[in-house]
Length: 512
Image 1 (cartoon, rainbow, N blue to C red):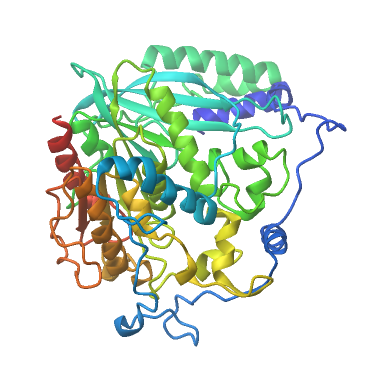
Image 2: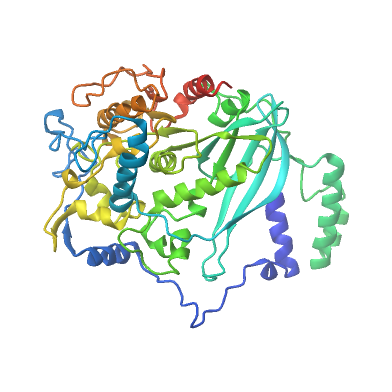
């Protein structure tokens, strides 16, 4: 039995567990209970708000299905012309960085917020960070300091909804100065929790036996018959150099620590649930007092990005962190969130965007694999603003709309990251990074965005910005000379094979 399970068992025996549970806050007229929609009900509510009667079905990922996704390049570009990044809405060309920052960038950000990702509310409650504990551990050959943190969102105005952001910070223990940090969307956990030494374990076992005997006096006879038995046995010491591994690179966190970086794990689910039923809870629900969203309210991607920014607030208070060089990373839906984070939160210095697909680096105007209609259905609509549903509508009070009606696309989102370090990463379909993600369409968006990087004095991929003619470089051929970078590795639906290239690339630019 593990220590955690034994303590839980002891709490049950002593009747203490009930005291440890959260006490439900009673409802009242002042605080009506949150709306309890299913995802389908919430989706229908948004369609009704928008006047949408029917949506086009999304394509199937099964290539044998009648409505399978398109993988014919000849049919891939029904809306071939992207919105021009360097032309204002009034038709005037953007020719200087000042025009970009003061005129064009705000136009693009407004369109992306209103039509795709949603707006941040005017008033979002404050987050207060608490260090639950600090642990001294090892990663590989390197001693580290691991902190388990909780960011409590002030729910004074909506006490029926509680949001506690779970975050782990791991830093090399012997760093001689402040270290850069990569924040990664994922489960929050310390890497190798330190274990009690034999003397400490003996004290724990003595107390545990006393507690168990008090709960059940008959256990004294059992313990007397087995005097050497200990309820908690010593665990095998953690191998300080990492578990034995097969061929390949060490895990990404270990690579970061070995290079003198720190890393953060921030749990997106503790910020906002990854489903439509959760939209009346989490941070989105808290701000809306448990009521359904309006069409331009933020979706989960923007909420996760907001949570990452609150994590950065904490990092700015930690004297061991180089807060000017904090990056954001994620894969798949969290790759979308990482790109959204860098685009809208200027304090992040860099991003590693892994296999992000539709809603991330993939062009929505491309008819290849995952489509706008894949996100406007009831399965993944919660990532986006409600207004995004309009572009999958086949029958509505406004008629119908398609991806060609979007005022913005993925190249706009990537351009908002300029001139900061932006690494777009993909794998290969043969290893599980499905064709569905549209690697070529993501490359086209990255190529197009390069024009803004160059305008702002940064270097792009080093190719032309003609997204209609540029083709992806070969697998494992990195375009890593500029602040905008691309590399397709030969692995699957992960960015781990690109981590060592990301670290080398970022080190060069931040002079680490």
